[in-house]
Amino acid sequence: MNTPTELDPTHARALIVRTNSVRPDAARVPLDRNPASVYLASLALGSRRTMRDALNFIAAMLTDGEADALTLEWAALRFQHTAAIRSRLAEQYSAATANKMLSALRGVLKTCWRLGYMSAEDYTRAADIESVNGETLVKGRALASGEIDALMTACLNDESAAGARDAAMIALLRVGGLRRAEICALNVDDYDAASGALVIRGKRNKERAAYVTNGAKDALEDWLAIRGGETGALFCPVSKGGTIVIRRMYPEAIFNMLQKRAAQAGVKNLSPHDFRRTFVSDLLDAGADIATVQKLAGHANVQTTARYDRRGEQAKRKAVELLHVPYRRRGAFETPPNLR
Image (tube, rainbow, N blue to C red; front, side):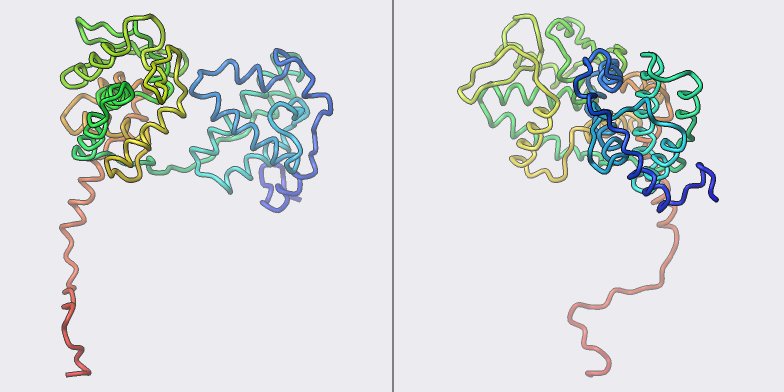
């Protein structure tokens, strides 16, 4: 018989379906006593949706779709269940995605222990699952300078307040490599016009400084002139009538804005994170020290920054170009030998 760490995929799926650890009254537990709710509340704003989706997926997988993150009895899970979850995630997702979901699982199990729903021994055993091994290429792409120019032109052609706001946001994405949630968290007081310094609050409430210069500084100050100096969110919604509403935007709004401007500019396959990849890779290409780039990007370790370094890929391509393949393209209108 297989040990729990050697569960084959069929056995793992069967175990997951049979677990059915839904607590009927779980939805009525106050949110400050619900382990999933308490765990998610401890995360930075930008991480909550990702980890909530991970917990919802795991809960549905365990109960054949009958439970979600808030209605699953997480404290009932034991090592055989978490080992089966790991097996299923390793089958279905890349190592990076699977490990992020396992991190959410470990986090909610630890919260169960902290709330007194699990003993220390049960928690330690259930959380003692290995990470999934593997490495994938960084998703997304680096933007060409012409694409960034086209996006900015699309904003400049829009003479409304939204056009000025979007130009300023794209400028900060370009020179600061900000995440969507970081853009939304910016306040007017975070920007020092005299020095160009901008305070950014990243993951785990870590602050870092960016420096807004040249055209980015001009774009931001044009937006501030339209927005006004009222304290609060730096970037705000703009109504269809052009009225600026002083409140914080949501990360989804940044995504929608970029899709709109990309369509206007004729830029395809654009995501907000592509600006972050471009920011890091362009600085490294220009000779900036990787430790400095790490600090500017707000990465917890330099290995994450190194994954965005495209110089190694360029070197590999140049190396492969040294190899000769004795093939000659056929002429488009050349007559086949058998028809001559």
